[in-house]
Length: 438
Image 1 (cartoon, helix red, strand yellow):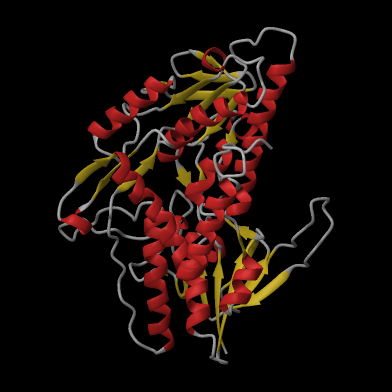
Image 2: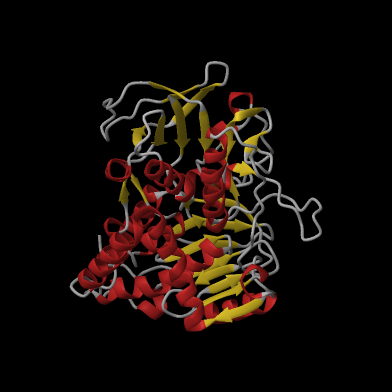
């Protein structure tokens, strides 16, 4: 029996487990196991929509147990906490109920091939007060918690007898990458729709405020300067206050303090600046890691110190050659990279089982897309698709953005289920509020 263990049910891990389960469903010699600390999967680029209330979480989550049953792999719930490379086992921490009572014991799982793809967390760069007073969008629970805080803040302001002060209903988003920009645009719309459902004590134009704070000289550094300027202009027209060249020194209960001493009073602060792998991965199991806690791998996706341990996605530091074939840094932490690496890893495992040499992975940058909700979508398409770097905006860019999620759904559900799920969402959307209110 060859045991393939995949730790992390994100975009890359779930796609890989599904493909392997289907491919080896009739084999009695190969066992595929997916491990995750959550019961359900949600596509991480959708978290800002859950947080803003523009997407119903229940309509898009994938149940790991059901996915495993339908696609012939095993699911084990638990958080990775130990790796014994000598005996080829991993340890999972006990899974507990909401009241702290144990659901599963400590689990020890044997592997012959181990694939670690547990994603990334936000990087606070040691900024004072972030851990205590800033909200994050790292997982499903974070997104739902922020949405609940936002709706409750609106209801509280509506019912209070005092005048709404300048810090109330003010959301400060720190980090103007894709997540921060997308959240700002969605919040502009959804907060106003929440207020429209009977919260007449709030003046939407005067009381609802969003500030987007970025340390760099422009927002969306992954896009071209022209698209960055166009996006900033659109956000400013919506009433979002964009603050570039503004480094955050401290997050406090009453707001944010910048390096120039300026104080931004706010009720909610969201940290969306920078990413890193989880702290426990630092030298995890004796593996080589970098300063961002990512597992250092060869271009075959094998870890540098153990050929039986692979890593992919945001938690992997995979070399990314430049156009001339020289050293070009590491593969960026993007959903498209995780999807590409999962596809490559599927082929790698097939070669490994057939005792064939592994092939190098080469990252293909197909561009970046940023959704601004119903207002617009901007991005650029790279040479891998059309031979040159082309900026796209508007309806065509929106279709391209939507297609990314559909490709993910197709990879885990297949064509028929994806079509049925899409149709069901379209039908239920007609009977539900335009924004989630709880």
